Image (cartoon, rainbow, N blue to C red; front, side, top):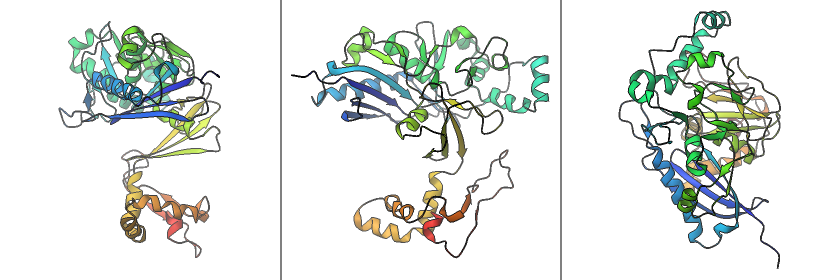
Length: 387
């Protein structure tokens, strides 16, 4: 009798739910489970978004243990575990890793107004590079700077600071460690090198953080550690199971969609649209807009955001999608599923029809005067090309 092939367990901790999937090395899914996070976050003040980090851990445990109840997969067959999470959610913890306050979740819009001094040399250098105003905006948006300003006594007790992926990894392996490819946020991270910035770099001057608070970084696909006895018991998994470094959720999406070369792109339609590519070398699509470390070691993901993403699809549905809305009602499906027929009927590039998606112009980019436009109409264009 042949030995069953080892299985892999992947856990995705999102904003609204946690998903756990067991699959083999060929990608065949053996079991899957999901647990909702309700509410996704609290808003104690307008513009704030907070969540107890332990809520994520509990949902993770519920999703993983639900896999074993169906008996389709035995936990002993799992050879390794890997974790990906939402980006930009930060946890402030004490020396034992216990949270000192709720996690600040990525939609949070609070701003610091007392900012760390950049120093004369870096201030002058950034002004010469015409980057001083941008860096000051980044400082204001940095969660660490806000906590240091508004909760100084708590900040003095903050021995560990990291992303949600860091904190959850610590619950799994008992060490303050994380994948370098998860570091997407207001942190002193050198995106080109995939490590923390060198001593003396402007990033350290810009933030209220010091190196001892931050996790050790490991390359994606390397082993971060092994399940502690406590974590193994909570998840129903073997003790000492390897926990392998993955990447942030968007980087994992690219890998899962097969975007492995610069001539392919990944379009993510949320409230905003994100367009990502895979690059074999570090490059910036816009000056001082860094490329993020990819899930594929030695590669980077460039990313551009368009403020109106799925909103534009909904706009098309309401303004031009009456035929699909009627058919969808009769079939009991969503109209968007029928719009795929429009895509199949048109070639890539829509025969030169170009859409500028500035239905909601930015204050800085492209500017408050920008407006949405559809350019390049010809007699060959129809409704499908517009979609």
